[in-house]
Length: 99
Image 1 (cartoon, rainbow, N blue to C red):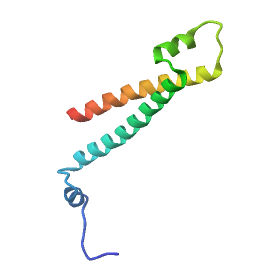
Image 2 (tube, helix red, strand yellow; image 1 turned 30 degrees about the horizontal axis):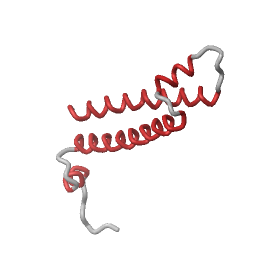
Image 3 (cartoon, one colour; image 1 turned 30 degrees about the vertical axis):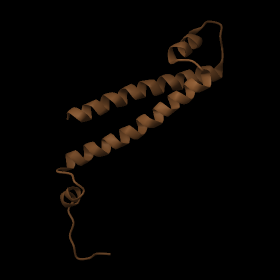
Image 4 (cartoon, rainbow, N blue to C red; image 1 turned 135 degrees about the horizontal axis):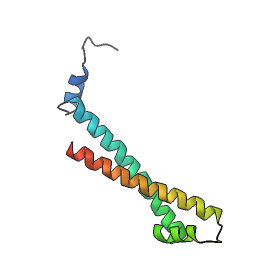
């Protein structure tokens, strides 16, 4: 389906409102990060709702001696991972703002 028109990457990006490829890449990275952030925040909310606890309270439950609950342990590990990932994404988004 060639209409005889020749396209360039710069031309396409400019037609989409981007001044340069780096601006387009930044916007794409921002959109990907915002999608991940939204999913991870939803997962944290689901864990908070499931357990009726904060992450700090869940950590206490996890670290309690003599208390083995594999479901709670798995959820705590996931919860901590999501929390760390959210912090990393927020930092990355701040970097993209200032670049």
